[in-house]
Amino acid sequence: MDQSIKVGIVGTVLAVIVNLANPLYLSFLPTFIIATIVIFIYRLGRLKDGLIAAFIIYIFDEGILTTLYLALLYAANQPYPAVAIDPTMVISPILSTISAVMAAVIGAWLARKRTQP
Image (tube, rainbow, N blue to C red):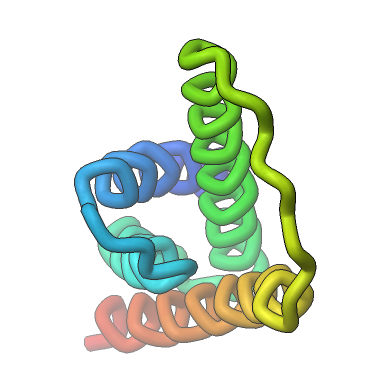
């Protein structure tokens, strides 16, 4: 359990750096790739540990990026933009959750293959 939390924090830092350095908005793709790679590198072979790490990465990454966005709006003294609800806004949290589970499954599967002789 401690290892999966450590992996989650490392993955979160990497995901935030990649998302901030990337000029394009790629939704959950960078977070998916980072979560899969970090789970594989740290050899979290159990699905439970992989799920914990993947959800930590996804939740903290979204929280940090949203906080930075709102802080930038506040610092620039700009009003929060009016949000028009569209299908992508409704489907995005569902796809993010599904991709977190997929990243955990793929990362744990690769880690198990790597540790076996």
